[in-house]
Length: 89
Image 1: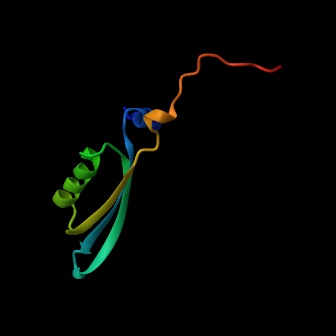
Image 2: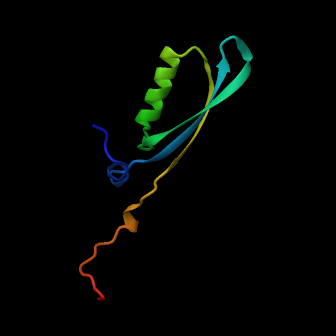
Image 3: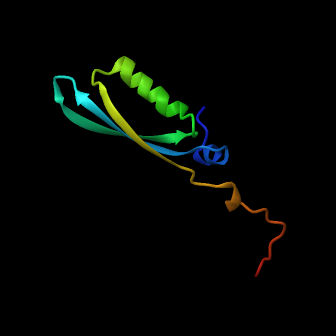
């Protein structure tokens, strides 16, 4: 069962985006791009490296290079405990 996005963010996952450059199998002088995005954990990036391993083992287009960025969307300091609340009306 896949965790909800909020559960992933609260457990330290961040949004990882990778731009994958690969060579077209029949025309290896041409380079194509593919954008991959998922919630992953830094600095190990198990989902990204798992996808790249899958690419190398299964797909015909050899990898040229990969550029990636990672961003934590929720940080620990952004959550505050609320001890009470005031209701109007």
